[in-house]
Image (tube, rainbow, N blue to C red; front, side):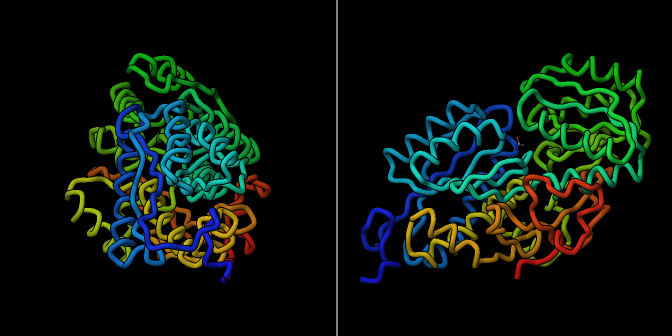
Length: 395
Ligand code: ACM
């Protein structure tokens, strides 16, 4: 028998439905962005099934609401892998949830496919990372802000691993450019408006050129609204973020949103035929007013990429899927994407956008090149993004 027709359990590749774990939060502090990831995952599953499934097998979503709680993410991943016959899990938003799930995945030699920008400095043979790494978002954002607004930066973040690590990286970039970090302030993950008082007082007292925010989830709209109420002018002192996305902007007023910046590989406003087709399919299924985010777009394309790799491998064996992933590309809404086999992260298209008066992300920097992921940030120089090996395509 052809060995390629065997699954990891040693059985012949069958035509039975293929359960895939889908782990996102429908409630909890990051629910609004994670809901967009869940919907985009479902769109990809529908498209794949409508086209005949993965090498003849229908994909079936399994997984419960993990409520933005690392313990629930971990428990649910154990249940899916040990009781539901799952070998592939798509999911996680906060790095704290990925860190909770990954040891479970590794101990069962399964595969986690993670669709969220994160702090980098991680590699697992059992994880494929499809969100932006710091060289694909922090680096362009730091450069844009320093060039256009100035070198005196104040940092504010939610109290968990991604903000600590992102602030460390952003600080390195600012200091390398002879800028100055004025203060570094953390608020609870699930804050109340009063939790931002100290940060607002410091911003008033220190008058930074920009505020780098790694506040995530429902605290985001709270912070932008408090910032507006405190009277800060984004034209003078914008908030620059990696995470503030269409779902969180939908929760704030236009007055609070206008003038602030986000760096990401995808924005809903991308004016390409591919993105228009994606948005039309998403909205046909889920309604005209449902926001799409960069994290959702990654959740969408990663299912297509992995499905293509599994179809080639005709196996659920982790090593074979990862090996096959090196040979597939996907025409994603942001542009053509592919996994970098040297580090399991993704070639992505860096962009910076400014929120306009209609709460739409107007893209203000777009090099129209996809960028190699550098998860360990080996080239941390501020303008290394444009060097040929960084921006090169892998084909
Ligand atoms: C994140 O925690 N990776 C946004």
